Length: 295
Image 1 (tube, rainbow, N blue to C red):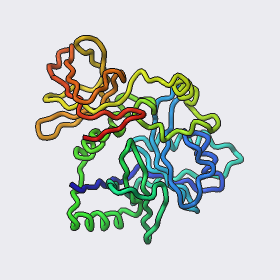
Image 2: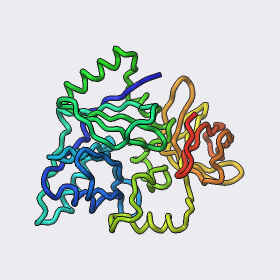
Image 3: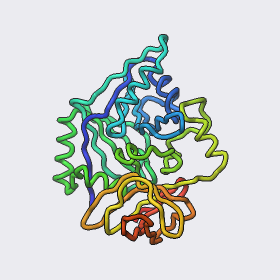
Image 4: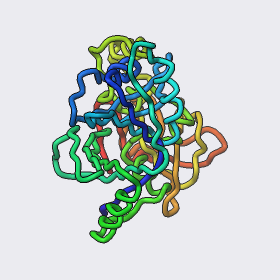
C-alpha cells in the first residue's frame, strides 16, 4: 500500500562559497564537486568509524541543504562550525522551524540524485539499501498541502511507529538504532554513502581497513519475533550473538533491526536466545553490505 511520512526539523542549510569544501572535508562522500541540481547521501563518522549522522545533501545553487537523521542535526552543525577555517566563507543555519520533509517510496526505476523544483518545494530521489525514495523539502505549509494531496490519492500517512516499522523492514538505519548502537556504515549496508577514493575524513582509517579485509564481523538483518527483544547485546543458544539496535511492535509481532555475524544471516533461520527473553526469532529479511532482499 502506498504511504508517506512527514517530519519537521533536523534540516540545515550551508551558505557561502566554501560550503561544499567544508562538507566534503568531514563527510564520507566526495562532495566537493557536487553540481548544482544534484543530491547525494553521506555519513558523518566518529574517530572509530561509527555513524554519528546520515545526511541527504542537495545542492540548490545558492545554498546546500542538509537533511539529517532525526535527532542528530545539532552534533553535525557543531562539527561543521568547529571544522571551518578562518578563511572559509560558510554559514551553518538551522531550519528546525517552518520547514519540513516528506518521504515516499518509489517503485519504478527513476533518475536518481537529481534535484527538481516546483515553486518553493525541492525534491530528489535517492537510494538506501535497495529502496528508492522520493524526498520533498520545503516550507511546512507547502509540504502539508502535498501530504494532503497524497492522502486524497490513497496514500497513507505513516506515524512515527509506522515509519520505524517501514525502515526496519527495509534494513534502514533508524534514529533510535543509531542512538542505541552506532554501527559502522559497512555493517548496515551503507557502502553507497562512502567514497573509497577521496582524501582524509574522520573515521576513514577504520573504513579503509575493513574494505581492505573484504570481510565483516557483523551485518544487519531484520528479525521478527512473537515477543519483544530489548535493545542491546544478546547471546544465542548454540553460540553467537545478536545486537538489537531498534525494534517496533505491529499486530502482535515485534520487528527488530539487528547485527549478526554474516555466516548466521540466512533468510528463514530460527534463532533462540540464551538469556531470559524467551522468544524464537525468525529472520524474515536480510540486508547485508552486498545483498539486499525485502520480504
